[in-house]
Image 1 (cartoon, helix red, strand yellow):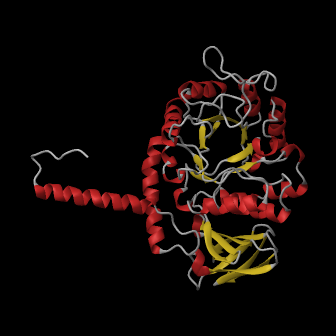
Image 2 (tube, one colour; image 1 turned 30 degrees about the horizontal axis):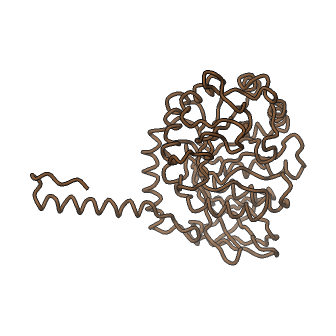
Length: 423
């Protein structure tokens, strides 16, 4: 610790010590995470407001005008892994348009790991894999743009990507962002493997600074896996940040990702979003009911809606889930408030959050293996007990009146989702 100058008086030193102690307490308080279950208490709302204020100041440093609502699109990894090529990407862009998904907002076509040659060229630049992407990435971007869509790409804040098949961007940040910009890239997913023993903050700050200078039109998605609580600091670095490890196509993985992401609800908002990983809907490891729950909770939680299945060969059930425009509208609501778990009893849960125009979004989620009635109390979702509402069932596409509470019988692992509009 540095010694105090001899000109300081004891009283002044005491004042400074008190101020410093208060700052430590304030920092500790700000780092606390709101409870995942229960009503929005006065303390919680005050904490959320304080964090929102802090988030605004952080975003002034990164503000790029992107991500005013959560990103929507498709990513290659969940279904294809490294088995990708330029024809697959073109066909996927075609399918997004031909199915009508593009018109619903699914605009990003994101290439994940394994798109590049194993080594950089003699100038130190990325080279697209000559076997799988022979036309190069710029030509592919031109094709995707001609469809009215946007192209995303992948790199890593390390020496190699997670597949070990291509270089990472560590110590090549500015060069790589310049390359991506010259190709017309619209989105960067930035992973966290092979970190060379260097800190998360150092590695992601370097790429964020490069993006601010050379990639202002590129959506920046930090894939740090939630290891260092990125919700608390990534708002100044990018447009979304992973709050969890990778998702898998099964019920246990999906539900755990939802719970892990829920604790950071108050940190999300227009320009920066919590990311519990991509959608598994349509990949075959869960039932239709489980996928409906998956999509509903991701929409309510203002998570990115990045399709992870093969959109060229979707079932009608998969298409029906991914194309539900009323559920998508909750995710894309202009208020940008992440919904959260507000009631929980033995696997019978209520998730809810505010929407624009004084409305509320509500999900009754049955995580048990049997049919059960779930009741959402108005006090849990921020409505006065006397409030009468029109309840819109977003999966049945029907409306009814309710007052004081909302009950429904929900099948196992399924959900009901509503928008409540006060009368």
